[in-house]
Image 1 (cartoon, helix red, strand yellow):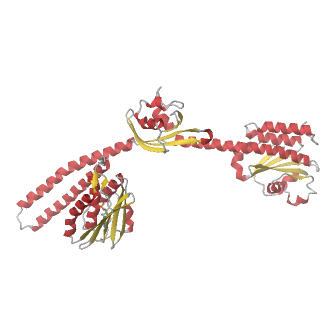
Image 2 (cartoon, protein in one colour):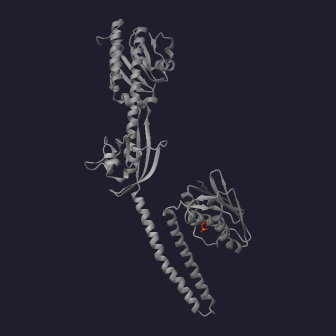
Image 3 (cartoon, helix red, strand yellow):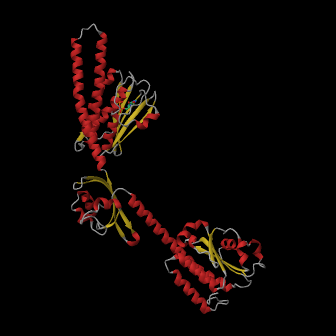
Length: 523
Ligand code: ADP
């Protein structure tokens, strides 16, 4: 038994022991510290066995802090997970205080004691409580009765309280460290460049992708370097630098496109402010999503579309032309052939319409908006009604206007907005049977202009509604089989409206009618 073993602890030895414990618990290596503290205390009070019952809820913490599986199962000290529901250790856990058993044979509570006490006739059970959480109970044994005293209990309690604080700190540190590791792992798994900058633009952190994209060469981007010094030679950073130089007040994040002419790359950039109020640090997080391949694919698609549409149109025109010539030369008494010609002409027209629509989509999506022109709304609506009237009259439909609270003028792209409005009206005429009714309602409310077309036509099944505004989608509604179309019109309407920061909607019931509408922000 160690020379330190004190049957009766005198105050100076107590102090010396506690001083040693406090000294130990300041060390960072919690894995060993707790074992050392327990051994020290066990020796000091002459315990022959010490066993730590670890609460299973904190198994992971224990494993990290304490590495339970590495404990040498010596005779003095052992540890295990669980077992806190029974025995003396269970009582201590329940009462959340240290317990002293002078003689296990004579103790009133002996009926609850379990196998754990077989090596001892005196016992101490001391809980380790971290921040209100019961983490473990330490059981100390001696083979003879009346070995442990109240004084031992108090001493061990104090030592274990200190150890608890250290365990608590080690737990926190572990959490922080593992959070940091996880964060680093996420950061590096992101396949797009990401930078953390301080207010002045000095790089605080950058992920593996940022290294791959920008770190090469002597002048490459590095942690600790100012973005300015690096970014002079890369246009991808121009706007980022502008924001750092003149942070727009009231905004905390920005989404914009950036183009690196030097590297021939395109990025969607999300830049956000970050702030650490505790340490009064702040700066920016910059995520750069490389969209170069997407942009190239999009350009390729548009080039293909444009080329294919133009190249396909000439033979179509030729086919239609020859149909006319053949028809002129054909004896009029061969009705079958005339029917065939008509069929060729019809399909050719449909193909031509499809190509026109494909080009329209491309044009509307990619052309810049002519938003600077104010449009006199009343005049625009009158034109639309006037243009739509013949088609409605042909089907004996009533085309009604309900315009009120109209602003004098709106700012929008005149050609596109007219196209969107006419599209909704012509659809209503197209999908409403003869003698139906179409009402065009236009009004302003608060800061928006509403354009709504109501019809009492065939209506649309609920299952089609969510897909209606997608390109080339046609709702195959009974009664519309004979109606020609490409499924492009509504997607054009949506694109135009959204490019004006507005929103489209549809409500419809089969056999009752439909309401298509959109609103545009005024001013
Ligand atoms: P298209 O009319 O050329 O087929 P659209 O994009 O304009 O293409 O319309 C998509 C589909 O939405 C149409 O095929 C039709 O099924 C449905 N639809 C559009 N407007 C109406 C309407 N007013 N009433 C009933 N169905 C409509």
